[in-house]
Image (cartoon, rainbow, N blue to C red):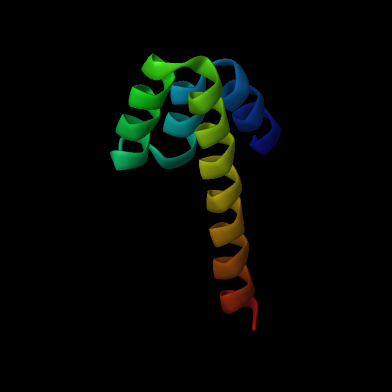
Length: 65
């Protein structure tokens, strides 16, 4: 699923962000960036997806110890 989110984050940035974090301020900000240009929206989307994965890893490590 993570690979699909990254691919969508590059091709259709708001969709990648929506699949990762749902309807949130990050999604609204990404829509704004994408309207200003595809590249800023894509960079933000990949960043949001990576940060979300990082946070999920921290949560899993916390519960496993």
